[in-house]
Length: 183
Image (tube, rainbow, N blue to C red; front, side):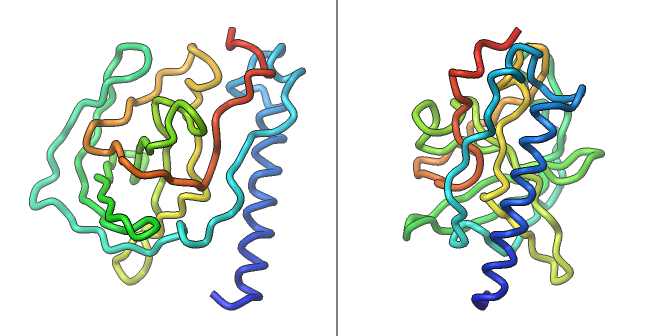
């Protein structure tokens, strides 16, 4: 990316984050309770990290095997193991499994910052298919599932194969305790 593209990307990311904050603060579909909304001052994010905006080759599995992912409420959700992606973070190799369902591609992951800087149960991404057969995996868009804010939501738990032993310093960080406990 040249400097103009970087500036445009950062502006788009800032606008996206601002719109997300507005949604969480006021929309009836927000995962926050009224009490939480009154204390909410905006989500916490890592600074934009262009090194974690990746175009990666998806290595499809020979067969799409259906799996059941346990959820935060004890239910299960059905996905297919779609393929894997491989990448490096600060020189360290990493691999994640991409899942799919009727809603599209789904990439849950837990990084080594879980419980200290990132949500302990993991974060989510929806990779975008590119025209050249690759995936855009932008960790700057990594987000906490709604169950991080309210126990009324049922969120798939990150499978063991998507637990990284390295930090992903991009995207959404831990919820702020000042927002209060979910109701």
